Image 1 (cartoon, rainbow, N blue to C red):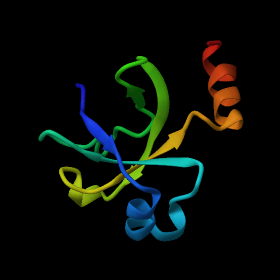
Image 2: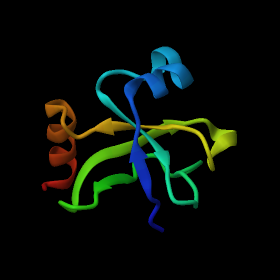
Image 3: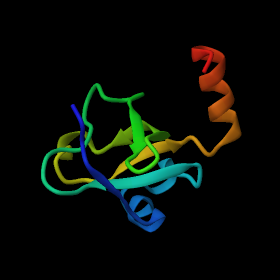
Length: 91
């Protein structure tokens, strides 16, 4: 299932998650109706629409607020994350 989200400011996620949210993450919130990724979706991709490239990996959100809360993704811009994904997938 596809979910449409919009990137939010880091401050939005800092307010929601405090020290769990770091500069190595991407903060999003759902847009256009529908739901955020929720329980069991950790590890799923965040794909940038125009480039069709994976830019993040679902990390965490607020479990009881899947429909309206910010969500944190691990950013694929981190070399350590890209290297780890490559070592597992070979891609």
